[in-house]
Amino acid sequence: MKILLFGIAKDIIGSSVLDWKLEDEGSTSSELLVSLKTKYPELSKLRSIALAVNGEHALGEEILKKGDEVALIPPMSGG
Amino acid sequence: MKILLFGIAKDIIGSSVLDWKLEDEGSTSSELLVSLKTKYPELSKLRSIALAVNGEHALGEEILKKGDEVALIPPMSGG
Amino acid sequence: MIELKEQKDINISAIIDSVKSDYCGAVDVFIGTVRDNLVGKKVTKLFFEAYTPMAISELSKIANTVKERYQADKVSIVHAVGDCLVGETAVVIAVSTPHRKASFEGCQYAIDTLKDTVPIWKREYFEDGSHWVFSHP
Amino acid sequence: MIELKEQKDINISAIIDSVKSDYCGAVDVFIGTVRDNLVGKKVTKLFFEAYTPMAISELSKIANTVKERYQADKVSIVHAVGDCLVGETAVVIAVSTPHRKASFEGCQYAIDTLKDTVPIWKREYFEDGSHWVFSHP
Image (cartoon, one colour):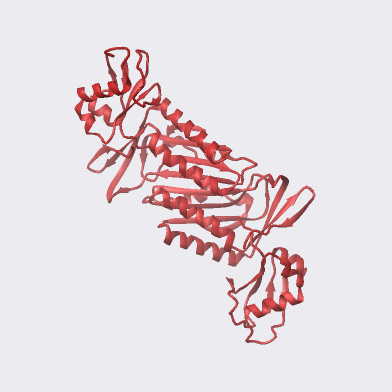
């Protein structure tokens, strides 16, 4: 699975795309977020960090599949 | 004294400027408005009618002088 | 920029440019246009008449109040006089402020107050006649 | 019109024209520009990065909500990506509605919600460094 990175998340992880091995097919987006925060503890220091799955803000319950487009969403600051 | 007329007031009085003889120099704008309504009763049928004296909305207490620029202000509808 | 002018001479871009300010992050612009109908009746055009010097003076008062009350840096108000066809611009108000909320509030105050205090009169033309509009007060 | 584009390609007049509607008498336009300072610190430029397809999708949701909730006829939102210098335009939102109050409310809803939900990230450059801005949530 590829995870797209933007803004400060890209700086923390040091790349604009992260190759991520989905541990088991039935895991949820909130479980993935916990795994990412564990591997990259700097993410937890942000004011907020969330995921988008297939272009929608993730609520946490989404069951992830291999082909999903996942993105890390640090605090947004458009406008 | 010349009284400037606009919009429906111009239609009622039939002119864009009215020559008006100020009865006495100490009269107020509200007295002038009463005189105008008496002479042109159609003005009283409007939703509102007011005066401006020297380019300011009149409050009624203004003492009129011969050289003042007076205008009849029917309901405004800019915008 | 406080002006009354013919509809064809109203340049929205120039009005927006006139309020740009390096210390302001927000510009709100209100554009009043001629609607094709009024309570279901087809409008063909509007005609605006103004008591010009007093209208300019009242518009300037509005602009100054917006600057004071909403911390606006620049305020421009341009109103059409003469004929305005459907879809054409009757009024443009632009307000620049450091932060966005005040730009909306200041611009809305300006158009609301314009309708109450500025000596401009609108005549509506329909297919079967015309009349002066009585909006305010 | 829902677009992300380089600052130099943002055409405010074209955005306003894109929401004109004969049955709407009101257009409200919000223009967010780059301020020259932030809490007193001199800004040299901003840089905007977007998760483009999701940003377009979220902007479209905002436009649709404005149409439904504020009876807007047309809504256009254009946001800059890449560098934006002081005074340049970062975002333009235009909303047309039959009556004026809804145009202000719809436009303000759009910019407020944009900042909350649209995956765009802003990096501020000062004379002595730069940082990602953390606005929302």
